[in-house]
Image: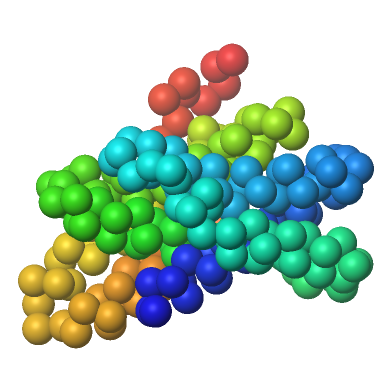
Length: 205
């Protein structure tokens, strides 16, 4: 039940971020739903295909489509209120990557993958829904932007989880702590403008 709740919360967070991006692009209601849908389940779909868990989760559990549809309707109705919240898209996107990174790691552990593979799977789960969203909306995906700490936050949080579970930590506490680390790293990176090194050098095109 704990992991199911986390999954639903992550689905809602990413669906809202997808709605906000789609509405900024002034897509019609069908386009808004599609963008919200691929944002919410795109990373998880790729994850399930990679580990051979097919049919993928949203095909086996109709509750995910229902949750996304309800979230889309809610977000469209209250989009003005959502936009009044400072940096709403960024906030929901950040919450989503924290939740989905850990879900991907748990899926990897369930099929006995090595920790490094689990972290990679968690990063894919967290990031690739957003990659598909941005590509469909004709944007450079956030994960590929030099000024964004995105996948790096997922990797740091996932690595911390494997450290925590070696300590006398309850598994649930380690899970939540790792989620909070991912969210905190991304928030701090944006607040203090922390970015990966510029491999092109200053002043070079």
